[in-house]
Amino acid sequence: MTVLRADLSLLWRQIRSQNRTFWRTPVAAFFTLALPVFFLALFSVLFGGSEVADGYRFAQFFAPAMAVFAACSATFSNLAIGTAFARDQGILKRVRGTPLPPWVYMAGRIGSGVWIAVISVVAMFVVGWSLFGFVMLWDNVGVALSVFVLGMATFSALGLSVCAVVRTADTVPAVTNAVFLPMAFISGIFIPLEDAPAWLVVLGDIFPLKHFAEPFGASFNPFHTGPVLGWENLATMGGWLVLGMVLTTRFFNWDPRGSR
Amino acid sequence: MSAAITVTNLQKTYGEVRALDGVSFTVAEGEVLALLGPNGAGKTTAVEILEGYRRADEGDIEVLGFHPATGGRGFRDRIGIVLQETGVEEVLCVREALELYGMAYSRQRPVDELISLVGLEEKGDSRIKTLSGGQRRRLDLALGLAGDPDLVFLDEPTTGFDPAARRKSWELVEGLTDLGKTILLTTHYLDEAQHLADRIVVLAEGRIVAEGTPESLGSAQVVTTVRFSVSDTADLPAIGDGSEIAENRVTYRSTDPTADLYTLTRWATDRGVELAGLEVTRPSLEDIYLDIMEEADRAGDRE
Image (cartoon, rainbow over all chains, first blue to last red; front, side):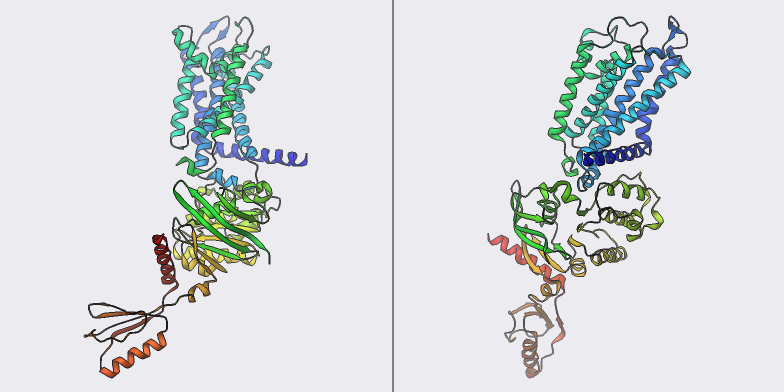
């Protein structure tokens, strides 16, 4: 028990150190936080000058979408790219040579990613509320929170699995973005999929992002009828979570040589 | 003294390549052992097995009473690893990195002590990316010592250093031995092994080809070289292991230079021959090392 207590204290310090590293790496902070805020502002100005319906403005629907986008970027993209670079520089190898338990290091990275995701979500809501007329609806906050927890687990596992499967550090950012940006588009993050062809909708259904974004957005959508969260959302995200965990545990390598 | 490291018949093969082929040695507590050899000799493989990064195909290994591959946390708590080119978060300050990488050890050395041990007092609050190459390596050393280890692995500690930085780095390592640490050092510089190590193990192509103290290695097979030029090489005396002649320049290799020189000079004075540019050279340790390597090469070819 005392060992676990001591390990949790190590984890806490590891998370804080990862956070520190994140904030001191401007490019990571920019893509994770500043870019979604910029999108939120841009799209809200372009489309959201007047009310969309019933006193609600564009940001009511777009702020949650950008929150999901930023949260996934903070976990999926950051874990994949950050861990791959750390491995390439031999940081993981150094860690492995110390008595720090490997799970504490990995949990530290994940914990830091999730913490930054939480900050991003709060930032989107605050910017949306203060500048673009987003109204916080509290009825479904519990559901949104549950979806968020599952989404974070899924996208953390998937981020690490990219780093596990792709061994070349230079390739990881390309693969990550090539996966993440198209996935965002086919998941209705930027543009609603109402007029999209059926095959595109089906394609979006296969990937987990839509199943994160839709129930999360629905939780703050005053016009949504019926249940916010569906079983297919849980099942799809859960499936990808398991896949990510399997790939990561099966293929993850701490050695930089494996990546050259 | 008990052994900090005992290795018996270490074997490791990568595909077709035998990286280690029956390597055995021991390192006593408090001893500095240098694994010396050219690139590709198997030094790094051997050390990475002892550090727990790799598994041997075969062989008995005991490091500080642990098997490195299964020793886990308890084992890592007592060793310090200083590798070449292992990264560290460059956006952290020196002090923050030492705190971070030291936090999991049960016996932590105070950060200020570590900083002054490697002479980075001026840089404690600087970001790591602002350090010079030499300062970076000193930080690496400090990181390896963060858990006050009993055994320190130093992987080619001065490769790529200028002479002044090398001296400084040697002084640091000597400071460690004063602290009673056991050190396993790899290097491909003979003078470094000679300077720092109590004992040297020479590796070539995955095998130990020589072993001993720096002094005993130096005297093992001393062959003195005698060189001179004569106008007529027809009637030279038979001394040493025979002569090599190239355009009137004669080279003898002698294991008994006192007697051989006497024979030679008597021969010359008897005939009134001038030994032009006479030169008697004792081999440097470098030459001995090269001889050992050549010998290992030939042995390899015979198989």
